[in-house]
Length: 332
View 1 (spheres, rainbow, N blue to C red):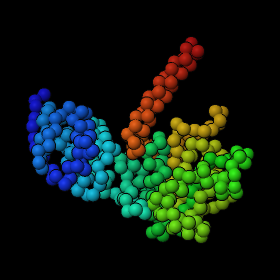
View 2 (cartoon, rainbow, N blue to C red):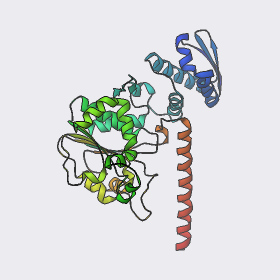
View 3 (cartoon, one colour):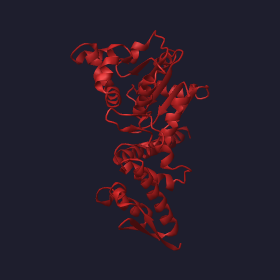
View 4 (tube, helix red, strand yellow):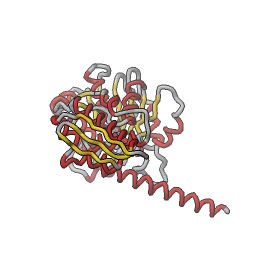
């Protein structure tokens, strides 16, 4: 493979953002693509194998464009740009960056950061019920919350209802001090955190007092009809089939529903089937219901989280293969 050299013009006022602290972004690109990158004033000199230099150029120009749009370039941006090029997907980060859902109370834009997240957000916009299924750190709950707050503030819905199945065993709550709300709050803290960050504590409290935002355990949904609401069921992997059916049949006219869960992190007893697992089989062909499966590539937390998720996925696949071999041997 022939060697290639080329020069990119990147203004110095964007270089620190693109290069990263101690040039760690450049070093990452150099290491993964086996190219050499040298900074010279407003220019970058790239050298190495022809195809690798071309890929490095494309990644750096995407990062430059993101920087020009006011984005802070993070490790996740760099890792995902490399992932897109290595997987030869017909996408780039710029088409994802253009989809801003809303802004946090501090003015930070909330937007999808991966192709999987973009498909998830689009499904929420277009479908009545969306299942967001994937590992920790893929933004399932946070993006759903951003979409709910946006719909509420634009008066597409009149209220937001957030629920989790974490406290169906009533006797466990007795060990926590305080009234029912105090007992419920620890289980629902991730939902509160997202609300505070996007909506602000004062706005959240006002709407909570008016009953326009409701945060409640799943058991409290029984017997209700939820019209003109944006409903989020979080940690759905911990529902039973009966609970999932009960919840889905609460949805009324003018409502939109998002169900999030991680099928690898069930807290149910071993002999209890997850309602999320059953729902994916029963509802897969029903119109107006979307299933979005996020993967380790969609993790947007610390890069180490992505490595942890990948390691566990590989371990679980290995365990499944070994169990399958044992079952075959037992039948023979």
